[in-house]
Amino acid sequence: MTDKPIASSQPRRNLVPGLIGAAAVAVVALVVFVLPAGYGIDPTGAGRALGVTKTAESEMNEEQIRGAKRTGVLTLSEQPLQRTAWDDEWQVVLAPYEGIELKYTLDEGDSMDFEWVATDVVEYDLHSHPFEGGTEMTESYAVDNGERMQGQYVAAFSGLHGWYWQNRNLEDVTVTLRAAGPIKGSTVFQQGGQQERELAAPSQ
Amino acid sequence: MGVAASGCLARRVPSGLPLAAAAFLLLVLVQTVPALAHDISEADRLAVQQLAGPAPMTFLNLGAKHMVTGIDHILFLVGVVFFLHRLRDVVIYVSLFTVGHSITLIGGVLFETGANAYLVDAIIGFSVVYKGLENLGGFEKLGISVDTRLAVLVFGLFHGLGLATKVRELGLQENGLLPNLLSFNLGVEVGQLLVLTVVVVLFNFWRPKRSFAPSAFYANLALITAGLMLVGYQLTGYFTS
View 1 (tube, helix red, strand yellow):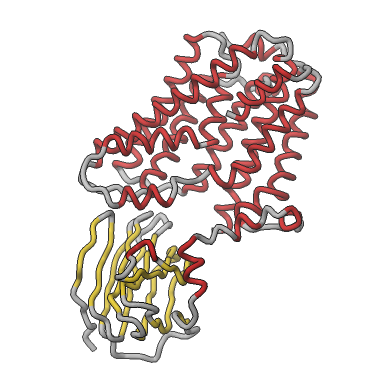
View 2 (cartoon, one colour):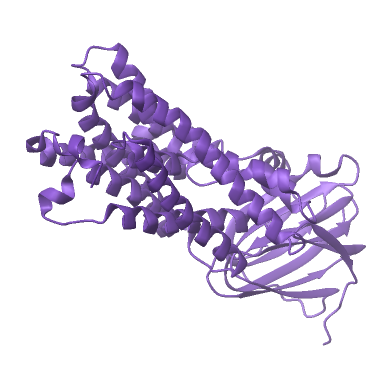
């Protein structure tokens, strides 16, 4: 190789100790700084002591901070709801890494029962934004991943309320959403476009 | 960027302090790995999702921005040009890298190949480890002969796969997909050229100095450390997500 002469003149006797040192530094830096800062994984407690763990906590974005201030918006249920009549049912197949968003139009104080089930784990963000103030006022109530979610949702303001789902699996995932309540309409957002859709009550 | 910066330091400080330069690089890395290793920002994603049709300048910008702020790509490039003192060699190796990542960037998006982002990024991190080890003559010592040109090409393929995943996360529309993708790719090359210009110029200042040889040893160890951190960071992400 034309580029080797300088490389070969390196003092090689130090190579193995050097590599061991490099690996040791990498492991220590990972455990002490990087994992606490990146994922909030802090086995030694050093991340917290040094204050770097905060980066993971403060990763709560503005939307989540606004959402966290609300109370009574979201009441999750452990068990599937004992409801048989729904006002809307919607199903979507997400290709790997595809994301989609469905929002219901609700007035302030409207209460909606909902449940959604996915055939595999999906990332989701339950959020809303008011008609007055628009998307800049978006509030997030639940950002997580899972295969299902069910409960009661009470709109904190008149606006659009719903979920963003993303499939990070390598196979297609089907998401089925049902909702019941005084829903005024629904909108699907995908890849830049948004589309109004008619509510579709499932046949009993 | 980090190693280039440490090169700067090494010129000013006594040559007995290459460790300080390496430590400085690590400090920079520790702070930037979680922030930079993985993302095209949320704001970019939202902006792109509102686009319909070809928007070449936007994607050119995004591609360049991703390259310039992508610490993993930069570290790999630093490793690649570390001992290349002839411009001809720089051009050859960088072209191989470019061919590699362009194939998988464009192919990956057009054919929608699904690859796990954490695993791809872990391999990209490993490419940095590999390059540092190769620069230190580690493979010769082990008696393994590596075709360094083939290696750059192959790791280029993985870097492209990583780029493709980032582009797909943007949620591109079918409308204008190809021109936008080509613009992004062109932007990546523009960003790469910017980074390389800075790195190669700094190396050309540094190489003739007496401090270069001892510092180069530590700088490549620092590259290996950085690469291992990237690998560890991405694998942790893979196993916890």
